[in-house]
Length: 388
Figure 1: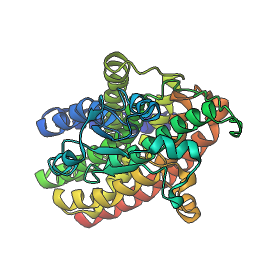
Figure 2: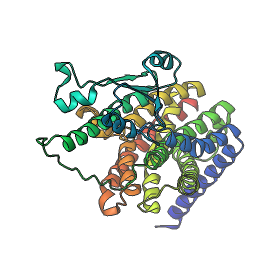
Figure 3: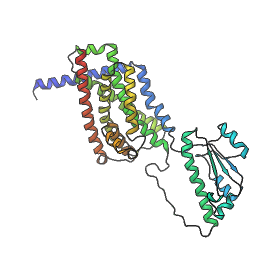
Figure 4: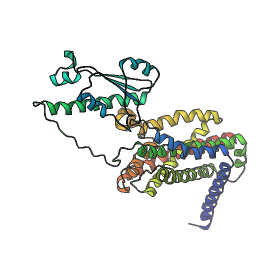
């Protein structure tokens, strides 16, 4: 490389660095954005992880026991914390007032003669062996999860009771369940780390897009046009500076909020995870600049964010497994960088995967990032040319 070529490369790197430092100072003087960054990686992560409705927790249940037999007592004793509060014994007259007042989410009604009908083998179609479960469906998350859970509890207790007292009962098969990567099935473990993955993509798009719109609204973009800098240098400065902010914030969140405060164990390598996050940030920051070139002001940018972020977060596999989605959606979402980021993030953080496992996601992220950057740079150049 000749001295002149080296000088030009060094000048480009210097311009990108100095423009990036300018972006960092502009962000430092924006208190709203600073509050958003802190909130996103602290309060939002903690509350989202602890409010994920995956399991029951202290569900209010009342039981009407008109049978008062060993079988009914066995069923009553099967409901205990932390899934349920201690069952409250009520009379049939207290059912409707209690449900109307919202005192109970579930009411289990065990009728008189239930044990007799069960031992006699009379089913519900024969006028016996029925239990009524009343559910307050206004509490949607608990009602949906709890109905099936209560049904399993009652069926299990009845089956064990029948097998003890009926000689010709069919033999049972014991299913030994061992949960890998989360032996206690603690919902906060997955919720916290999944939220970190989602927030990295969301905040990077917001910061880069807001940085460009802020310069346009303040008139400083015209100052850059008269300086000896190229659109590539302006765009790269915004990409590296905002990506650095998101990486630092996410690293502090993982170590201080997720690991220290919430005591969530991490199975894999954090440097490998943040290396993947850096590649994804190359795509998402470019996406933020592209959206900012389309929007004329911050409200329009906010509306575009809703149209982009919701599909990215809901269809990338972080909230719902991709296998549960239609095949067309699965194929389309392979073009989104967040899809591959969710896959590599879950593999590294949850299952302790190494680079030999996640290299396809790294390769896909690099390719998608290069395409997104080229598209955003072309759009940014045309926007700059129109302003000039």
